Length: 412
Image (cartoon, rainbow, N blue to C red; front, side):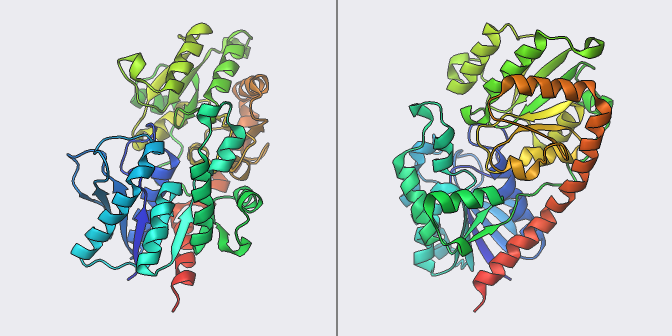
């Protein structure tokens, strides 16, 4: 039985989704690890402890567990500050494996912070390293609007080093593979395209009225955003689109609201993230308080109800490595409207399984939302095609592809 060390330094796969540092990567690490465990691998997920009251070792499923290691303060720390705790985190892994006589066949690291640790463990243990970036700094910088949003040169340098150190890099889409080759010039054969997955036992269509009743929602129609509250997600563009819709006239006197899921809601507005504060001020300035609601992070088992209750799921991202929430919404039979960026171009086929628009075009976004609401027959064709497409992204299928990759690297 193979034993795999999975590294997710900055974000625990058990954390609630939609928080400051939690999102699609958490779901990916958790679901892939659980599925690998079900298939007979032993999986240890190492993450930095952010709460001293959480058990050091938490079962994640059959043959899989999460190991929390103290490196720096046991509290949430901004990603940009975690780099100074990476040597300590690496030492704690080595200490844990030595004390518990644990030996691994392969390392799978996620995000650049984990890749730094993975490179050092690879040298120490002389085993293969597989890395997945989830977000590339050079691509994030290409769409950043100001200096505060840009990633450091230090991160870009480390990402380049990881491309040299890793035995294999996983790209979630052909687009991301092309970008990795264009910007960092790794050996093309080193990059394997394996998309992210979706839990089709959890995400499936639910009658809208039933979903609204379970969530305690009125029959009022709404569109939905799910994701981190981050400038790169383009939520400001969506709010502009809602503002435009509020000044136009929808057929049959439709009134459409917007529910935003993500971010840590705080009783003190000054304690919230800068992006959340900016969005709240924008909503207030546009007098949209009756139309836009911030719901904070939500349990994943509630998300199918939100998707099923919504008229559309909107992803106005400026950059998206893959966009797992698009798959989740598609699996629930919810129309997806997304920016034509990154991996969203791979999961959402314009006019076939969803709708793509140029990034930042809030007026066109408003028009497309209007079309989805006013033309349910055309929308149904999109969602039926989407339901067919998502079957190829089930976690058992995706996990088998990852395991085939592992086998190719671990052959004697």
